[in-house]
Image 1 (tube, rainbow, N blue to C red):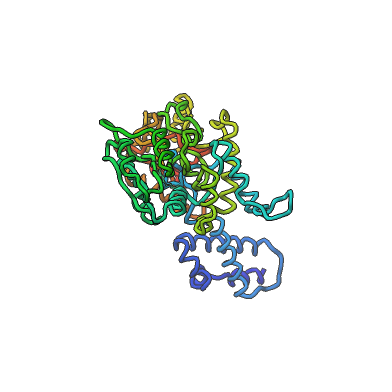
Image 2: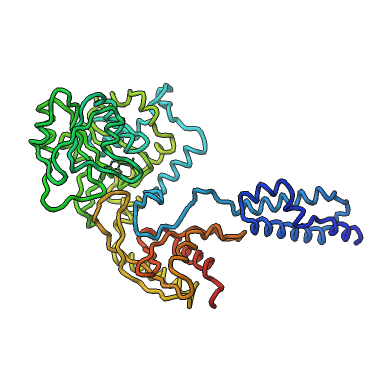
Length: 483
Ligand SMILES: *Cc1c(COP(=O)(O)O)cnc(C)c1O
């Protein structure tokens, strides 16, 4: 018994542990509160162990302190999170650029995990044992799904547009309508990209009306291409005119210049079956005779960040041999995910179940209402008497700079808090994980908009299990205050 008392007296104090250099590092990563708590719990556990144990050998004071530090360290590690972390998207915006655009399907996650956790045949042809093409399968799928002769995948669509122009129009002129001088968020501007690629921009037409004769008048010896750009994030309505794809192809052929199209989101699917306005598919563009089409992997396609170039074989070959293509090439994880996503498109009828982006788009009113009721009930249980809860109609968006002016009628749970401001609560829900002092449960920041002084939890963009996760976050922030 004496030995035990001696042992207990040797346990280090919280302050002495805090002062240890090893803990200084942790103080830079976690709040002081978190670190102190982890040390306290570690000391308590070790004390418990000492009281129960019958080992009478005396460890040194230093050894005990080291043990405390190690356990405290471990405990903090259990709630460790990275700066880039999962959040819950309750905005109703499916392709939210700030929230990482498309959610990948299970098939893509599995493909990434398999390729990431070991070696792969990235550049090995398993049939011949020779060096293989890292993009072979993805290229084949793009060709099959778009009808294009050839394809190439690069880091994003901005890179795709740049690379096409740099390869085929450097030092020459590229004609773009004034109505299509697009700026995408994050400094992608068509005039700047054309200039940076080394091509000279020739603007034709006016903001609202450009005619085929405007293009024709601008073509001369130095013209390399006509670039048609999808006005992804705005709409020009009213007194407008733009030549059809067919007319552009015709004039391009007649003058032996290229016709390129930056499709932005690049649908592989006709979206009108989901009640959205019909948008041209990549296949439509290729079929109309456009020489090269570029589009994003993580917009409506629903895949990883990537830029896809599809079109004429001779042109794609030229583009692939541009030294800059290497600087823009995608890694094996992207290829794994993209192959898995494109594979899903081979069974388009199942996409509403297999691909999260399409699944969210295709949710019907009954499903949305069911979800809203489930969220409302769960919230009522977890935070009763904290505010007014109701189910409301709420408009979401496809987002990601696609389908401007198209709103998706959806459902949301509106919450008007009684004891805190809506803006205060909105911020607390964003910071929820930072508040998670050494708790067992996992918490995720919730991103939710405010409408009419009420937090409006859109249900369309929630993923399985997130109804409960929202309730946990609210419980963390509000729970215990008014019971
Ligand atoms: C989104 C978009 C881009 C940029 O695509 P990223 O994949 O984000 O680089 C370029 N052009 C158009 C028309 C777009 O809509």
